[in-house]
Image (tube, rainbow, N blue to C red; front, side, top):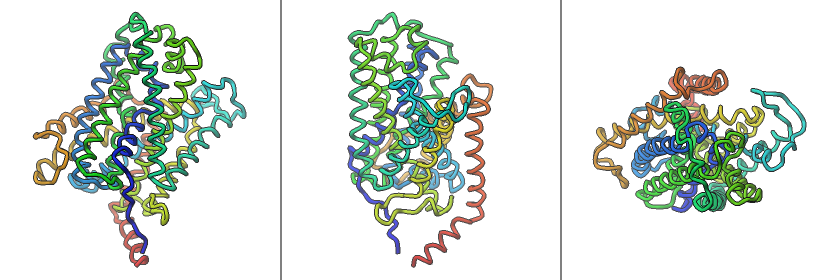
Length: 463
């Protein structure tokens, strides 16, 4: 019979860098100018403080639950235990949308980096989407990146973790150069206007926060593969969240100090242009771009890991076809789930650069829906199972659960029609609606017991 156990190969540093590298992706390079032009320098900081508070509250929920239930799939396990199989399906499918959105985002972001380093290199016109011309060599760069990341994750989690550590250290080093450079050479007058667009501007940045900070929850996904005490799983999760909040706040202020409003208005990559302005050399902009490439790799890598583990857990629970639950006989990785995410990533560049914003928003909605259900599970498990062993405890009362629940619901509302930061029609709603329809099909089959019966047949044959 095939061994269905995942290997315990991750150390404490592996966990920390998996989460931190996931959160410090490419977004801080490509979106920093948008934060400030949308909300103003102080407005952007306020948005990150509010969003960071949400992430800390949700993170504390995850930290307690991950240490109590170190099982592959994370929220899949917590929601299943607290709310049942149907709610677990919704949470798992929603967070998978978030994870896959990040992986596909990075596949589009990678050729966008080349645009900055090698202007006018594109050739082989294919089509135009939302006013942006898609070229063959541009697509191939993103697709090749997808193949490489998929291959690394296919052959083993430890190899992926080593890659993560090296590239996360590169991001932090480059980010610190920008932060300290802005402190030394930045102009405080550039921070004006402090606010832009009022409350609507702050909300525009706020809806990006779940997408930017998603990543700490990769730790719960791989908790079963971590070789360390359960309490440390929760501790490292919170450390990674706090480190990411500090990093994003410092980058937002650094870019605000480095570039004037006029310079920000015409900048395509504000973080890179900030480095060039601060140090008076385009070479520093290219150094920052290399840090951005490292961010693409770490974020992409983490969410292939996280997304594949959720799909694996769903298949093991009879929620989706058993094909997603196949463990590679040699590498002990959920190989089919890894391949599935890799294929979607390879296809994403066909949508062109306009897809960057669509993917951010559509994925963000899935993330906050999952956060809402995890918060609800945290509260219910405190009531239903007060004696459950909790090596990491998020306070004596469930106050952080209620705060996470309220804030998550508030974020969900921000995405709805009529709100200043509503999802864009038709592109973003097509992404969300298409994913929901696929999920609805699997949900109906799950309720019929289709996949559980097939799993039982497969297991009987294996015996």
